[in-house]
Image 1: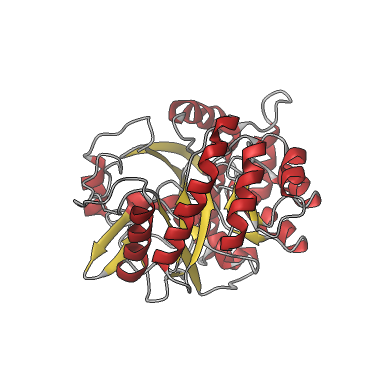
Image 2: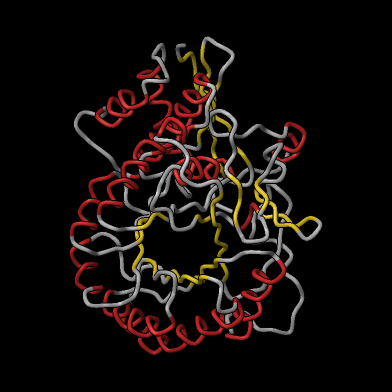
Length: 396
């Protein structure tokens, strides 16, 4: 089997997919995408394409190394790594289809039959949009509750657990990067406590505080730790692992980071310094399935858990699930709320994209597919409807 050509697919509302064609009936799907930089990643995919034409797509490790080392000594970077990641996912999809097995079977075999999902919750009540439409212009339910107030966080968490079936949530908050945010610290802790109360005692609740000034991050860790969050995500800007290790030293809270880290090397640094207990590589940025499986295994030796970052399309989620399924240290899996649908009291992820979308079970898990490659088949009628909608380079 040899690679013959690349096909770029711009999938509404703002995703980019790649289909790799071969000289056989097999094709592979991947998602080479970087938020708000789609055209740059597409250009990099086209630059890498000649390196792979005529090559055997099942030699994934060899092709990964050749792509990573291309570029006259300039290694890594978000655009290159996002392009490489999407190509890598498509190569693994091809390898699994050629072998007739799921990808996780080629990575050591299945550890988990089901994957626990978490849903993001902010300062508004949840709603759904039609497949292929952006989330922001959706139609939030009418309510007398004010956006961002503790009561709203409490009710949103209640709806997502009692009605939608999630058993893990993540609260989002933005404090900014200056010290004036000090006055907001107690308010964040109050809203988190409200979300925790709304979710109930048996539901895991994490919080993403989105890279505040390190001094504020330390205060947030101290304020949130008594509430026992599942994890506190990115308590400071992610450029300096040494500074992250300093501000988390001595805390009893579980610290998570990694969505903007690319390649195994920076995760090795963070784990070696004891800076994180939960690793959050993004399968579409960190290096694809190849690199994320290595990061997961490396973290296992440091007693760190895996919670793959995944705010993109259902295709990225399908790729993440393949790594989740064969990782003993899996904690929980993120997904993008824009991909949620509600039908007959069920929460469905990926409707319109796949013939068999993921369905949340009564315990907040989705089942791992057992079909070859990524384990997905396009819903051609639904996908045609999605593709008829506007595409934007700005992430929706």
